[in-house]
Image (cartoon, rainbow, N blue to C red; front, side, top):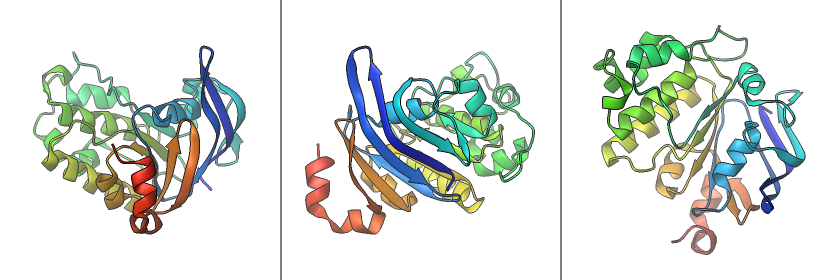
Length: 234
């Protein structure tokens, strides 16, 4: 098991946001965390990454407990995080953004170079010297993922990778995630776009009001129209 979350609780101020979230992701598996806006998806990723304190519960990355570690130590263990806000360095070029993210290769993780990432994201290859601030939203999303991969993670947390992107870019993003899985990378992604998740994920969890309401295969979810209507319809 690559990532294991057990009975995770988290707060924003006095607001109790996560109520005993439990989920897991195996090595080389893509897992989708689905739910409506405000259901607790992003908070789950931030709490796993140490950006929001875990008040109770356990988070294990491989055989290491990480729920009390600061974010920089979690990242050094090989857990990558791609935030919804992207947060690229807008004054730096594509190449410079990638250099900032570079870490040494690590055992049990695919190794990434600039050339390998340009093959994964051909759009970036055509704008190596372009400042991040002069890129489209989709291109910035690709750059954020590529910068995270330069850290040679064993698992990546992706927050809403398809949000606000043009359909052709969404398809490119889906192809990239399938490639990451083929490289043996574990991916836990938050999504509201069920169609996107169905195309890339092996399993899914549904979160509603900070609680996991479903966990199972994508085939099970696709076959249960009532479940989708109850928790995912807008």
